[in-house]
Image (cartoon, rainbow, N blue to C red; front, side):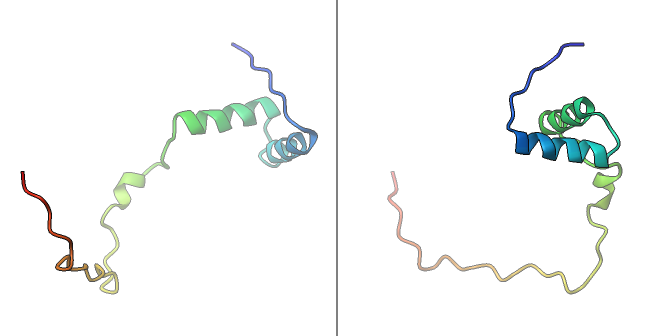
Length: 76
């Protein structure tokens, strides 16, 4: 497997170590997961199933502005 060398400051390293520790993974795995999430974003399982499931009458489309005061356009 290819390897990458990173140069980061001490404060950032402490944050990375803490984040990896909280997730109970190695620093290498934590960094790889972070990079992967940026280059291959993945939505949570079932995300697409949420579309249109809210049935609440309080959700209304806001009033749309009228463009009657718009400047006249040139016609070609």
